[in-house]
Picture 1 (cartoon, helix red, strand yellow):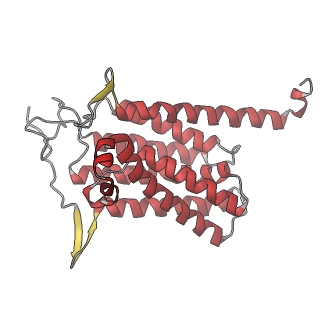
Picture 2 (cartoon, rainbow, N blue to C red; picture 1 turned 90 degrees about the vertical axis):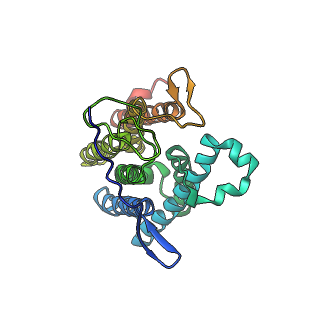
Picture 3 (cartoon, helix red, strand yellow; picture 1 turned 45 degrees about the vertical axis):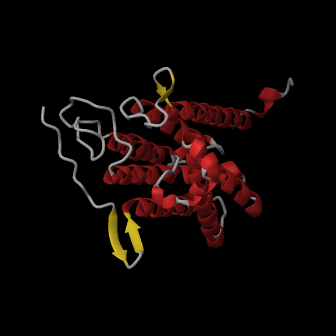
Length: 272
């Protein structure tokens, strides 16, 4: 069966002297903007009370935490041997290597520091960011596809694609699967949930849970990192790291629902 032709889009959008603008970098910038817009609109819709300066600060703190966490997370989770042998490689970001799980940790740390600064509960801010987060994830996966990286496993499906550097066999375009499930579908779900204000932490919980289920599923179609392979039976490192994300997300939803029930029925705990 004939495979689809890889589109061969130049990863560099344009260059000005030594400065190059890449699709991957643009994806990050647009993802940050999506997160900032989510905070801006939901701050008003949910009547959180942040000023415009506070919203801008939240955008900056979250962006910084995400970038640092994504890079450090990739080196720690996926390339620890390289990090130990060559610590300076941590700063060679042009060579690629960003981790969602590391970025998640980074943005949580940045968000916690910021929430203490403005006196707004961290989970309330995190809920707003969670609504826009799938947009950034979607754009990042599309950029992975343009770069011809993080391709899928070999397949004989009609939409299989031969990726440069991945051998002659057709492969799943798993980057696009992730863009669809972790990005577009999850964003649609988050928009529906965001139509009304929910207890602090619930929106973050739904986002983490939805991402975890989508990522765990798509990993069965994605080629494991060559230098790691599978780490626990048939499971990849990506799937292993997704388990605590799912647990944390489910716990946040449960916690929010319990808190909401307690507020509606304050006498339910009178016997304690």
